[in-house]
Amino acid sequence: MRTVIMALALAALAAADTVVCKDKRRIEGKIVEETEAHVKLQVKNGAVTIPRHQILEVIHGATTMEVYEGRRDRVDASDPGALLDLAKWCHDNHLEKQSQAEYERVLASGPEPVPVADAEVIGPAEKVRRAAFRAAHEALKHTWYDGRWMTWVDFCKAKGLVEFDGAWMTPEEARLKAALKEQKELEKAIAEKVRECLRKLTSADIEIRDEARAQLDAIPGEFKLAPLLENIESRTAEVRAYCIGALASLGRPEALSRLARRVLVDDSEALRTASLDGLKKLGHPDTWTHLQKGLASEYSPVRIRAANALCEFPNESAAEALMNALSKAAAPKGGVTFGTTEADPRFAGGTKMSPEAREAMEKAGKLPGKSGGMDAFGDPEDKAKKEQAEKEKAAYIRALSACTGLNYGENLEMWREWFLQKKAATAAKAELGGKEKDEEKK
Image 1 (cartoon, rainbow, N blue to C red):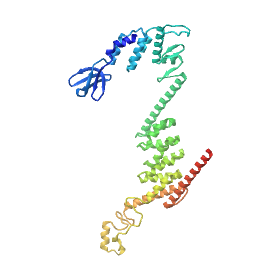
Image 2: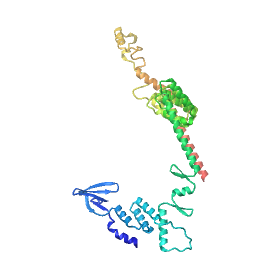
Image 3: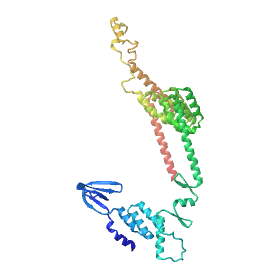
Image 4: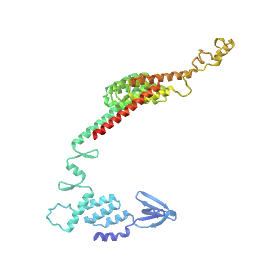
């Protein structure tokens, strides 16, 4: 009854100032400025100004906070039931901070009820008080343990738990996590030391480089992995050389793709060789997949390196990519042909050419065999392209033979026929295996 009377008394304050817009929006707040041009409201997260031409109606009233403040000032602080009602009202009106405060006031309204036996008779007022206290404890997420209500922190402490990095756990778990955290911080510090030493390898002072290399060699390999992978692409050959050698010695599969890339694109032949040796030490079965990527490069030297490296790591699955590369090399674009170059008609006279004509051709640098002009094979640029294409084809053929155990040379038709037969046999085998599994299920 008391709660109903209070609600009726405050009914006039139930609504805040509200601006109803023509687009049906309703903006609630406290009007702080109202002119012929606009209405300005103080809202929860600041202030908003609405032009008059957008406003359909202005409704004056109290804000939700003002209603709460009025109820808070009038409620009996010794009445847990009234305080509980106010706490619930705050929650329903999205005043969570105020709701928590009112639940706390419920618990502060009097002594904590003591447990009673089931047979003990208690009056209606005491039942209301006990229900209010219980609801407040539950709303505040307190836990009933060992015959009393506890906050979460007190409950964890009562269970013998300790707090570590914002979480509660057993002392053993906390010690383990602390040790792991310390280990992680140590690894981070060592990794930074490795990066510092790698930077010193770029120094012009040989003593600094030697000291840095000695420090790097003294650091256990498991702490160097990440910095080595980061710096294997360094612009400094000295740094790349150290990273390649160290990664090869570690024998970790994480180094596979980085070493394969060095085999394909490093400017230094010595470092390409060192990277290839590192791949051999790793002996990973998927090495060929990383080397095969070089066949798609736009640069001929990279494609040739990829083919040559596949000879060291042969796998029949690389045959299709090699066949495609061979096909492109056999029919290059850009005007390079492999047929016979037509002779210049001016050379048709050969040794019978007149002395005047020969002298004129020599001055122009157009006689066969003369430096600076065309030779018997045509334009030097076309000749270089042809030689490069032949070099590529030879590399692809060697790699195909290494990967398949066959040798069809430049005969693409034979390679294609073998590939289609192989593909058909694989499909038939897979189909047969599927049928056998179906039979087993039956």
